[in-house]
Length: 335
Image (cartoon, rainbow, N blue to C red; front, side, top):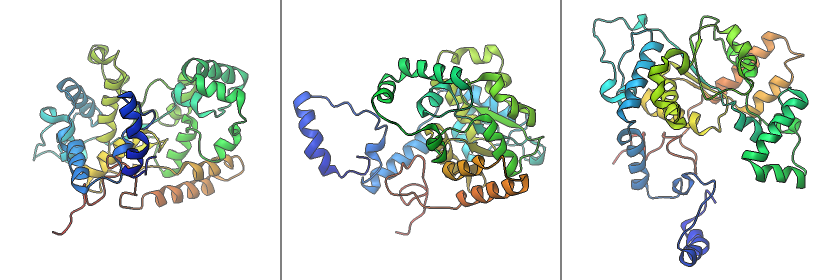
């Protein structure tokens, strides 16, 4: 129904609304306002999202501290940071040398237990993993758990071949190394607790020792006001990812990653690269990595990433928040 015309809602939904006085849309998010809506309303939504909406002061202030530490206390100002951080954005010193600032790559590892369990994929943990994830599904995704019992669902191998599985940290590190990120790269990892903990993060931590998170950059007292608020912790990650010199997502379908991408696209002026892998094609490469030489693997991954960097206008029925490159948002039009 994402691409449905208004007439469908008038015909199907309005009678329900009139009868029950309320309609609960499940799983729609903000899709009802994607397309088709008048261009002036789409333009207003764009202005609201990229200009009017701001984080509250305590998030801006702590986010500014995070960005400053990531840039080695030599953070520079930009339209993106000014909008993200408001009055807490660092003002550029005209005498400062921009090359002195540390550069960093932000990576959103969408590999929390909820994502792993919902994916129905297998990640090499044997029966213990299968039992743990099924127990989690029974509590948090009971409908999915029942569906597994009643319906023959696609196998884990098929899901992986179709690119439906989240990238595990050890797969993400292969992608980053193949692209060319060196051992000395400063990496900020965004996300909640990774499923598998330190053992799962071992490969990426060994290859990239300069790896940090908000928990390692901020003191316990600085993090304390946010600890019981997952959305506020995510806001700090959003700031760090949006302000990064490069941003890599491991799950292009993630709402968080897509919104970061849209923000960087809108304010980046083409200078803020975002790495958005085609998971289906990447999966086919990873499946063969046991029999492929590193040079061949590296070339295939680089070609894959290069193809995803092509510039396109916002596709029909896609969110203007994720794809702001359109006449109603960031494209200049002749009047």
